[in-house]
Image 1 (tube, rainbow, N blue to C red):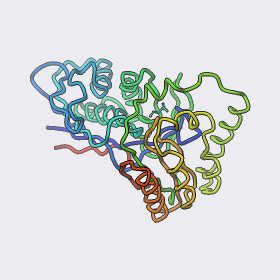
Image 2: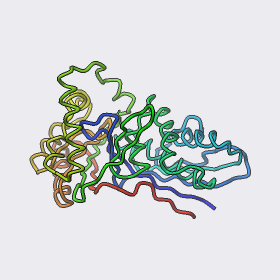
Image 3: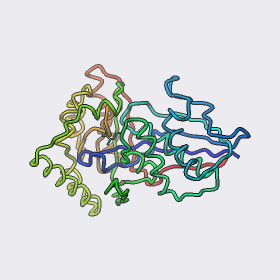
Length: 309
Ligand code: HSE
């Protein structure tokens, strides 16, 4: 028996919720396939879609690290082979390492008889984030694992809140063809924040959460502002200002950096508007001579898709 799990990409931070908020989209995402083997231990036997850049060594691979954390806690002593099929770009700001980690822990858990509930797998997937960028942030792995909009209310102790998703909320994502590693994008962040800026930021976060609960699209739009991190990080993203201007002029509710970038997301009311916004953002980037791809998606409430092969 083999278990295949597809885990979705995610938009983390969602403007004002740095390290605290994220949501899942339908595509892209990563697939992990696991099966039992006669050789004890976890082995990664094949990785595709990474251009040969990711390590096969279990202890160095984020999916391997996450799965090992799970297996260590259960004391499982059998053999497992793992294949990782990357179906999204590395360093894109769409939670590439998270999707692999989530797919790995869900697949391994299923293979060994589901000793953990879905939500309990989060802390194992977070170990993959620690390996990837030095910080076990959960605003990508949380929504990839649980689906929908997820708030990390506290990291210690871990307290994760699933938020309502307004029916007509759609996301446009544009991925400019440059790579930014999360670790690098975290190193440019200022460590001290003015009190006045903090007030603006947490007021917007409160507004965004209230907007989700009230299904109030205008309030969601007014709250999608990041005055602390976007001004610094956007300097790393070619064409950011043009993309944002194009999104807002086309009628997006709001627009900001997806995770640590370079992908940029916009939220809109309805699929048609989200498609228009994605096209306008891409046109702006093309005019600046930059290649990109776009994704248009409703918020993915389902999370990982498990198939027994
Ligand atoms: N919250 C993380 C960061 C997300 O912004 O660094 C990384 O995708």
